[in-house]
Length: 132
Image 1 (cartoon, rainbow, N blue to C red):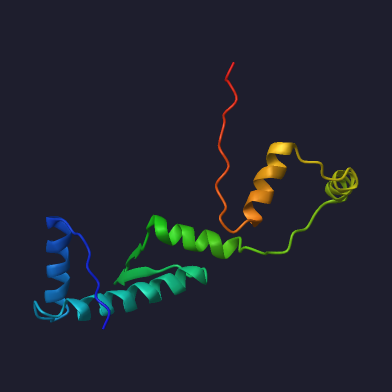
Image 2: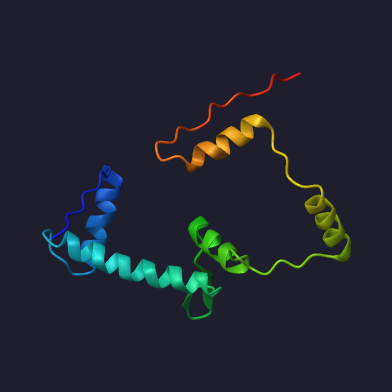
């Protein structure tokens, strides 16, 4: 059985204890608490990825669930990796011109790219140009 251990502070411990009690779990049921929280969080994340807005309602009062993590999930859903790229005619001509010029990287870049293909590769040394 895999073990999970996390470093927490007093505030987080208190919040987890409150959640555990609200879920009706005993002090020795931390794994059950984590499983329940993972299930809830997973559902919320899937809804956000699908572009759904999560709201809490009570009568006429409505409150939207807002969190930076949900914003990132929704942004990823709006602009997925590998989405179709549509270029204007001018952009297509510019890209064609750039591709026709060929690629002639400087020696330092060639060395860094060759280093990536080696098994015991070393990261290239970084040098920053002097600022004016």
